[in-house]
Length: 377
Image (cartoon, rainbow, N blue to C red; front, side):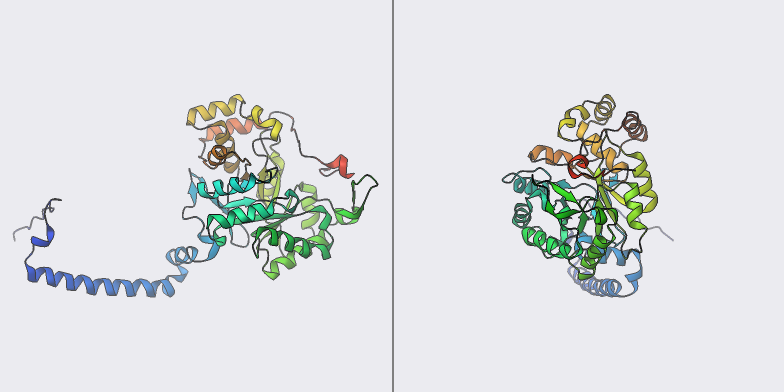
């Protein structure tokens, strides 16, 4: 039997005129029939048998709100998002809007979202939620594709004050729900203040935040908040809260985390106990940033990988398993901070070793002004 040799058709050949007319007609008919059956099979698979398969999960992921935010699990070899206990995906790099002034924060938010960010971290106390919300709306990006965080301020820890505080943030942001709502600090304030206007700590509610937490759990049940967590909690305070019979465990703990205050014990504890850490001031507080970017180990890694020192540090944070909240209103820096890359293990280890080799330097500590040792072990 002779062997038929198939030769590829050259790119410059008009395929329509290679085949006889009847043959072309027959082929077109067969292709139409094939396409009809293929489309029918795909539709059937999407709504039935494949529901339990990887394909079914992919189809659902791209059709259900915020879960469709990212089509890639990794970016630069690092996680593009983490999955919360609720199943929601939280992007690993966010724009933090703390200290972003009115008149500047809106432009920063628009720059960030246009650069690919899909996570904005704010708080009621920042005083810029209305501008943040307006900027989000102006981008035209679907609300379901943006992960928005706000925080409950210390003055509103009384259970009856929690829902009204949320409503005020929702109104300012121009949305009817939050993706994440955090207890901003593990310190509750009384209604009254000192004669010079300083807050007075409510020690009962500070030492036992469970009543406040139960009020947050009700917000989840109402659908106005999808996930809840805490901020500035150390291990002792986390253990104190989670010792209660919680309906929803804290999904996130947002803390000061950077080269100068790496908190390896908290990072380890959080990883073992299923609490995702978020790093604010990831490049150091304002007065530390220049020093951070001049650390020899960081500069060496940046040079080797042809990235900036800031990108090396932010990548180190994500590789530690934390969410990073760099803040800037400078467009070039907003864009720079979003580009992360997986560090070679020896580069990661070099930064980690240098970060944990010196005594920790915490900058954000209001203990003296509030009359409470916030970070007491």
